Structure formats: structure tokens, C-alpha cells
Image 1 (spheres, rainbow, N blue to C red):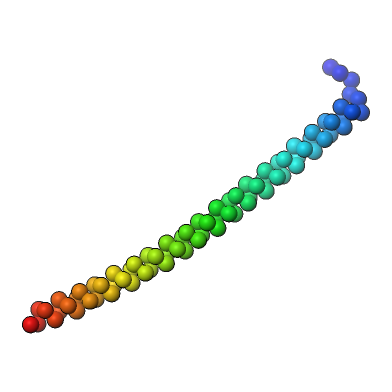
Image 2: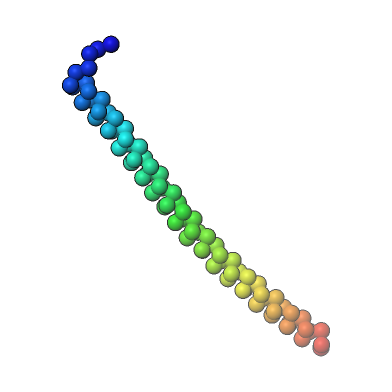
Length: 76
């Protein structure tokens, strides 16, 4: 349509370069996002596991006390 001039060729080159840079930055941003999301998930998982272990220990202790209590009351 229009003859290619040095200016339009340079602008086209800059535009292509900007697109490549935008793709690279987008990939980095997505990688950073998922790396951060994974870290949050890992911390949450670790906290949940610790909470479940504490809960299980409390339940075990309560059941042991209950078992000992019922054993002593049935002997009387």
C-alpha cells in the first residue's frame, strides 16, 4: 500500500521487538505468580498437617483418659 521507508521499517522492527519483550515479561510474570502461589499452598499444607497432627494427639489422649476413667469406674 505505502512504500516501505526507513522510518516505517524501523517502527516495524521496534514493534516486533516490543512484542517479543512483552511475551518474555508475561512468561516471567506468570512463572512468578505460580511460584508464589505454590509457596502459599505449601505453607498452608504444612500448617494444616501440623494442625491435624495436634488434633489427632489430643483425641488420642482424650480417648486414653476416657478409657482409663471407664476402666476404673467399672471396677468399683
